[in-house]
Length: 212
Image (tube, rainbow, N blue to C red; front, side, top):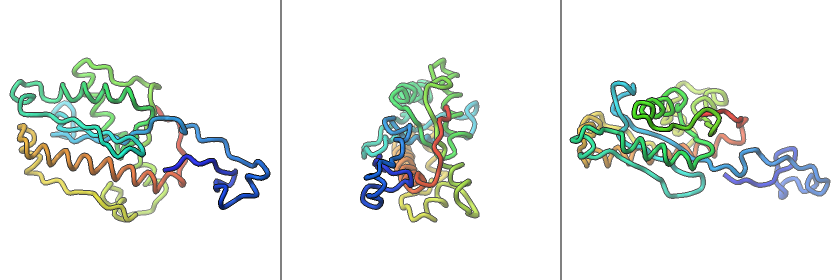
């Protein structure tokens, strides 16, 4: 995604040179200088009072590196579960201005907030950072039969969505190292394709200041 200066018709200098000569330029988007990050978590259960985080991944826009954390055998054996990785995630979120998720409004953000509050950690307060949910952008802008991340990215030609084996998830709950590696790989792929989906959608949507 490029932050190019555009004319009032949203074209570049190459495609609408006359607008640039006349000074008919569009105000820079408000998010131009913000740190945008793609966020996804994997959990042992869909509810935060019955489950815990297994892994998390954050990819900053335009940066190939993905920041991650994962529970391990010691976390399970010491009955700490996801306390350590919840703390590391909350700390990483302090670097983010805008978190971008897929269905994070109903799941990821609520789950992280719940686990952070459970442990007495400082989850970002209302108004401290923004949140864009590509699930709702996809539903509003596209007309598809289903709106899972896999179905939307497949329709738009974005490769990389991987299946998650239930047996791997079961083993990961008990701290199995090989299972957790597979869960984390799946987690990383999800943030990578979420960024690609954002690139496909960004010219077709209004990106408002919606708090996390």
